[in-house]
Image (cartoon, rainbow, N blue to C red):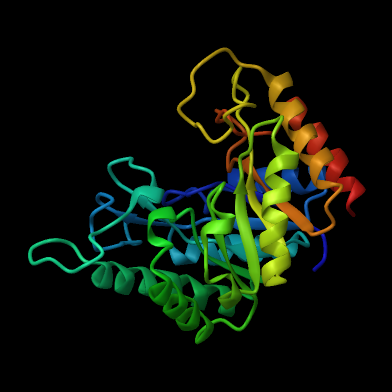
Length: 304
């Protein structure tokens, strides 16, 4: 697999975000400034709570198909390859990793079967877009930690995606989850969220390497990021951390990740989290205009 120098762009875009001129300008800047060759789009599917059975993608918190198509085509016109990663989120703000149901069916309680039926429809909808738009990679979900033990259902989902999309299919597990999934053989690419403490990269890469060797699949950190908040380098996955801004710490975290991964040729690349659709009002994870941007540009330039 070629070097994967990716960025998660305009993450979980609400309606209208991808259709704005600001998003195009921002993407142009991203390409110009950090040597990226891939972009990851993350259209949202919304369920009311982690215990809801229905996933919708026709509301204000989801981009329209037309917006997504247009932005994919624009990214391609800039020379980027495109990965599509449809992602489920909860309207009440609970993290998607907590979506879960009873393992046995109980009357009047939500059921795995109903939820997976909705999730498969959601993933296949975007897999069809990926096929029609010529996307080079489809990641069938992200950080669905408490669903992953449902091996039969996940194998069915991957198989259903393959009926409408003929490119490589992967899945983005959460940090520390790489060695807990039993069905990596069903996908073409193993992907993970690389939010590891700044001083623990070697330990975690040792653990992940065993998974990669077992399944013999290409491996990506399709998410990787750290906030510019003091202390985030130790808990980069904690988006609720409060504190003083610390751009230097964010840059140091990226430097540590790249240094550790450079010694592992099985790490095929990264999906930086994140680059916004609008260069004003940056989130703590955003890297544009901060020292971390220069660290990423140097590393991505090295991998060209």
